[in-house]
Length: 481
Image (cartoon, rainbow, N blue to C red; front, side, top):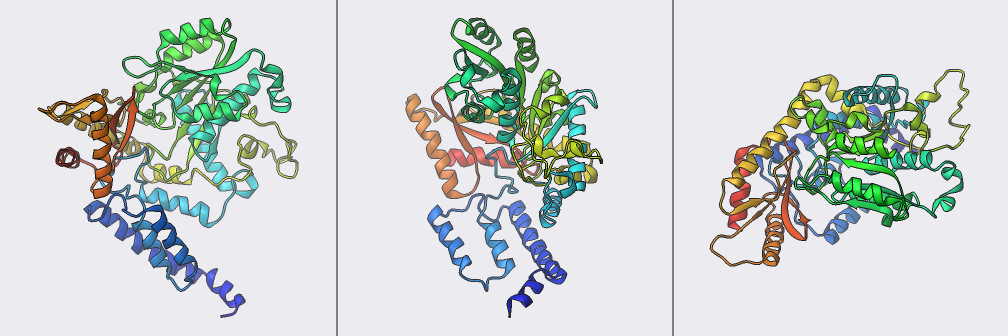
């Protein structure tokens, strides 16, 4: 077949229809296997074997699409398996994944309105809905979709830096380093907050990690002490970051208390709500976010507790004017502030680090439109119900202990062998051995973390098809190991 004929075939609507039909069969098989738990939650292969599989297909152009798709699905993590209780990644709602495909298939670039008019409009509407859920006044706030919570957090703190340190975007930070710029956050906050400070020229050593209280929230008393002593310690703290919730234990900082400190000491208040902001959808659990309405900026991942595929994140600003402060560049070939059509407000490229970005809101808009806001709330509440069930099963068992009472769908626990002498070091090693064996067996997937030097097993219970039977089996499997 000559190249012209091949091009015609590859781009033909009939070829597309055939590929989509094959994909439907592959996905049906994948979802059936996950729900029947007939395959491993995590494939057993090593990086070297995976890479050889990939290389082999590059040189064999006779492989069918169906074979390639089945290979990719079978050798990935099976998040749709009810035994998967690992990272903070949901089993995406199938329809959400298909809506996501639409933006990719039509190759929409949402940094400029005219390049993705519908996708950009969807993003604006979703930002408006989420901002209202935070409790902000409609018309006063603004936001932008980003590829991930890290990028949203970095961008928010860049805006805070530029507002506090005038001209730092153009001149850099060299004129401001005598009084060391710094920000405060919980000792349990996500590592991307420190990463942001490195990127912004503040320095990771200028991230003030506030100790946590008994509920593993940022200790407000110690926060006040640090702020009061900051000037005499040569620190110029300009921002405070609250976690909603923390990654290790799922703890929600006292956002209302942090907001009070931010007002008193004139700090920018940012909330990393990547995981927990979605609890605003639930009337039953939105109280966990009391005080978020007082934040200057919020990072919110839809690809966690709103069950859409990664990546789909929103960065929202309480004051719409601040949404332009992170970046102040001119690109008249793309963005014309004097555009007679008045579309500059819809051009997202001036609000984000990405000069090209996908349409990140089709999936959330699609499932919200199909199933309703209440359905998304039910997924969150099911995850909470399951986590409380596991907490109950563990606290009623003599051979397990929990590290904390769950505030969200994250729980840390460990197995305690009865009738055996053990040290803290040997207990930590035992938990690591348990997790390694679970991975080797492939009959479940959990993670682990260290809390105050001790290793704990850690679960994020996010699959709505998980039930008490699966949770009991996990504990029995651990006992068996």
